[in-house]
Image (cartoon, helix red, strand yellow):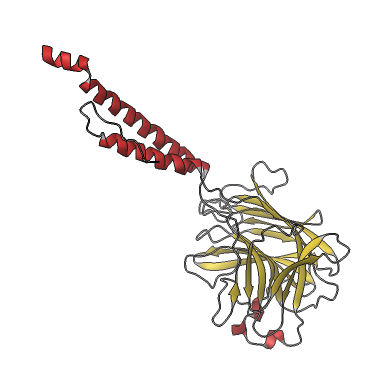
Length: 366
């Protein structure tokens, strides 16, 4: 419908009022339909109509929904990476999260014939897309290495990537694991925290810096990823290895408030990532974890990052998760709308007053 432009008493359009009205219309539409960050999402794989998130697949791996194994009822997602010399990643990718505090819940299952290998199979990772592109390690990664679970946390000090390796206990193939990660992301002036719970028992934690403090906020990837199977690493790590097959189920991400969550690890200002920490404060992040026979990172691990490798096929399906808009923006737009409305009203009153009979009579008397 065309926008009605008010006329002055002389019949001329009031252009400024029309401009203000147009600005009000645009601002009102922006305020009425803000895009919100998808900080609480869940996937249980039970409904055929449920839209799944991104599928990041390098090579010929797959993520397929089917009957859950191990005596579990219902459906689950089966993830596999074939040992074909090219494939190395099959993951679901959930983006649109902010850089605050979140609880990540999910279940995974390693088949009873899972092959123990002296390499990392990353089953969940939190990855921060960087301004300079690929070639960066995930900020947090849960992996099975040999016969054990482990967590790697990365952060940056003076331009160099630092790593903490936290053992999380035996892998125990042939049974489902229920994981909960309570994560508060650190910032340049505030320490973060990670608490890891497995089957209701806390198995590891980390205090201090836990990301690179640049680029986009970390997003969540779950599935299977073998860094040492990347084609540029050669074929030595593939010799004698079977394909990687595992199952995932009941993914739930909830936005939380670190200060109000009763079971969140305590954090204090001036932590590892803060330049103003006191001399008696720890000089680096503090990891704790379960006893494990695996105590060091695998040698020659290629940094994780990016979905594209020369000559490799990448297949991604879109997700509904977006991260635009906030209540703060709505408040700013609302203030602008009120200011424009006031200006338009005052201008109309002034124009009307000048053209009224009372104004003409007053001018004739003077």
